[in-house]
Length: 333
Image 1 (cartoon, rainbow, N blue to C red):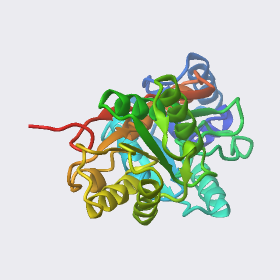
Image 2: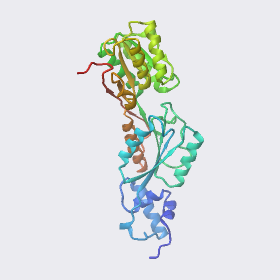
Image 3: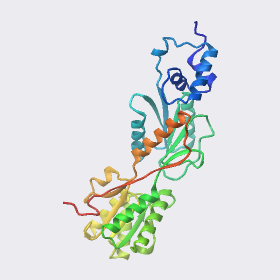
Image 4: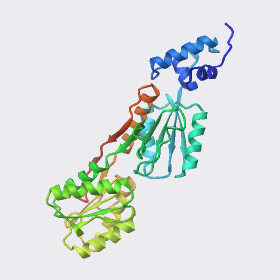
């Protein structure tokens, strides 16, 4: 039979991407039964025959990842986790950097859709909810780290409250009796949720909070140093520092060393994020709550594949953190 239509025409007729049409015609996995039947019917109506026969036509799926900041702390490990889940070589990845610009983000979204990607992961650099993009195009979207503000979307989020509670529990277990909560930007959701959970857990354990409130500032080493000096001047008997991230914790460690306070003998210090560049070179090495960023990427990829297969799972899916204990809270050796 003479070929009268292209694969692109079949995809357009069936209302799917070229990659999805190819997978449906070649009985590839992750294509829903309804989608497969629609594509086959469209191919029959148009008289489509693969140029080299169906057994030799193998167009792999393609997904896009739009990061808000590829050079930031969170993007790379999340993308690595997603790549692992998609499988090297089995699915092509197109990565874009929006550089924190909403207009650039929408431009990348449009460009990816025009390239017939099967789905897109929208990767945020801040933990606060972000505006939904779902109404712009008919393509499956999954929001990673920064959840969508639309409940019907699919988002994968870190469990910041659990992280704060975990850090507080560990300080209590390591012997702290008066803890300073040194947080970052108070307008960031992670700051509020970690700090709130930590304060609640410390209160339940009967542990005093130094200064009676959270010391909020910015996510930086200078802020950590300044906060540690202010706390120790006001509460000389403070013996625990629960820090909003590892940069703050490194600053706290530096200030305590300058003040001649032994860590962990006289004060214990814990951070968040388990950033290797911060925690491993610290002296002592820094205990931190790992937010499992690679797992966020893996879960995001799995949920995107399910959505592409016609089995979306809307709502916010949480990935639990894990505690990594080092010398800043427990003596080793």
